[in-house]
Amino acid sequence: HFPLDLAAVEVPSING
Image (cartoon, rainbow, N blue to C red; front, side):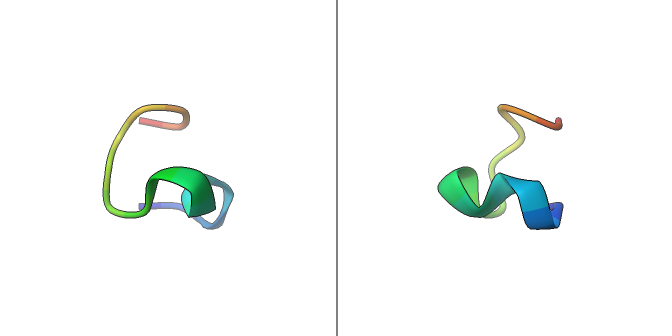
């Protein structure tokens, strides 16, 4: 996961 995926931690949805 990436720091920008805080809304989807461990879940590839925004940054993949």
